[in-house]
Amino acid sequence: MSTTDMTTIPHHRAFVAENQLAYVTAAMHGKWSSGYGPFGERAAALLREITGAAHVLLTTSATTALDLSTLLLDVGPGDEVIVPSYTFVSTASVWVQRGAVPVFADCRPDTLNIDEDLIEAAVTARTRAVVVTHYAGVACEMDKITKIAERHGLALVEDNAHGLGGTYRDRPLGTFGRLAALSFHATKNVQCGEGGALLAAGDDLARRAEIIRDKGTNRRQFFRGEVDRYRWVDVGTNYMQAEPLAAQLVAQLEAFGEIQRRRQEVWRAYHDGLAAWARDNGVARPAVPPECVHPAHIYYLLLPHAAGRTALIAHLAERGVQAVFHYSPLHASPAGEKYGRAAPGGCPVAESVADRQVRLPLYPGLDDGELGRVLDSVTSFKVS
Ligand SMILES: *Cc1c(COP(=O)(O)O)cnc(C)c1O
Image (cartoon, rainbow, N blue to C red; front, side, top):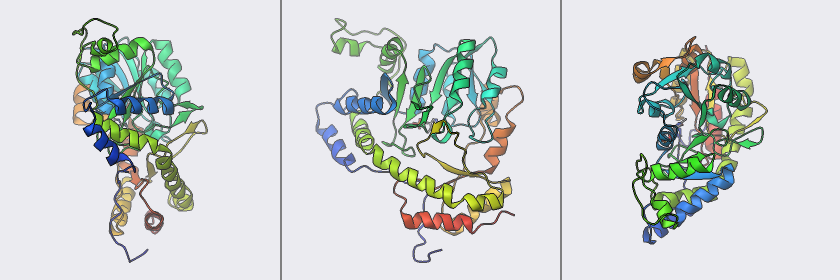
C-alpha cells in the first residue's frame, strides 16, 4: 500500500461533465427556467435515443416517476403489488401511498434480483402489478417475468434506477414494462443532483402521464394547440423537472460514453483483480448472466458471513477506503412489516445477502492509483 496518500477514497464521487456548469448558466439566462424548456426537450430526446423508449417524461426523481406509475395504473386500497424485498425503499413505498399492499418476493442468490420462480406463488386475486429492480443494472429474468405478468394480467413496472444503458437479450432495460423509472440522483451513473424520468410504453399512457405530472391539467395539449383552453382534467401532482437540472442532465447524457467507459474499466479491474482472492476466501463476485449487458453501476462482494463483511469494511477503512453496504430487506423493515407482507416462504435469501454484501468505490473519477489501492486493500484481507 502506498503511504504517500492516505486521503480516504470515498465510496462515491459524483461525476461532473465538462459542459455542466455552462449549460446551467445558459438555462438560467434562457427564457424558460421551469419545466418544458429546450434542455428538458433535449434530455428527453437523448434518453429516447439511449433507451429506445417511445416516451420519456422527465421527473424530479425516480421515486416520483414510480409514484406517477401508481396513479397511471389506478392502483388503490386493497390492491396488491409484488415487489422485491432486496431493493431501495421507493420501489415499494409509492404503492403504499395509494393504500395498496406491497408483497415482498425474495431475491436470487446470484444476481440479487427478484427470484422469478417465486413470483407466481405471490399472485392473488388482488394482485395488480409486478415491479422489478434490475439490481446493479443486471437485468432480471425478463423472459419469464414478462410471461408471468401476461398470464396473470399484471402490469409490469421496472425500477430501472441502476440500469440506464443496460440490456437483456439486446433489448434496453426500461422497455420491458408498461412503465419504467430512471434515477438521476447524485449517486447514479448519470446524475443532476436530484432527478428522474418515467418511460411509458404506449401513446395513451404517455399522454395521461403528461397530464398527471402537470397538476392534472391538459396544459401541454393547450400549448400544442390541441385544445382551445387548458383545464383540470385528471388527478395530478407536480413532478416537473426544472430547466437548470435538465441542463445538467443534458451535459451528463452527452458525456454518457465517457462515463460508461471508465465505470466499465473500474468494474472489470475489480472483477479480474479479485477473482483469485475471492476464490481463496469463499467470497462471491457479481454474477452476470450471458444475456445481460450491464452499465457497471455497482461493484459488490458477498462475504461468506456477516462477521467477515464487518471485518472487511473495518480493514478497508484502516487503509483509507470507504466501503458500504445496502439494502435492509424491506419485508423486515418497520414500515414494510406495517404496510406489506412477505410472499409465501419469506425472504431468507434477501436476509442473508443483506448481512454479507459490501460495495466498493466505483465512479469515473477513481484514478488508477486509487483503484490499485482499493485492490491491494481488499486482497490484503483474509476471511477468517
Ligand atoms: C436511487 C434509487 C431509487 C430512488 O431514486 P431517486 O431518484 O432518489 O428517487 C429507487 N430505486 C432504486 C433501485 C434506486 O437505486
